[in-house]
Length: 68
Image (tube, rainbow, N blue to C red; front, side, top):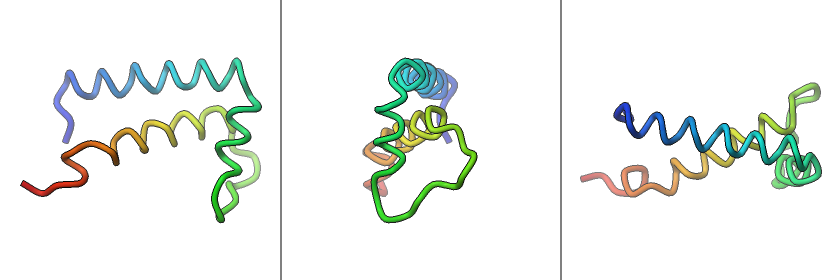
């Protein structure tokens, strides 16, 4: 589980990503259309793209890759 400071960092990153994808909806659409599985109809592409980038950030952390 993330510590309070880590959680704050993730939340700040999500907000920054969401702001970007709201300003550039074409970037959000391009990201959520990538891959083999289509996103569900009716989902907010900007929000989904922001969550996707945060999930990517988490999965690239050493803690997600290495069991110590």
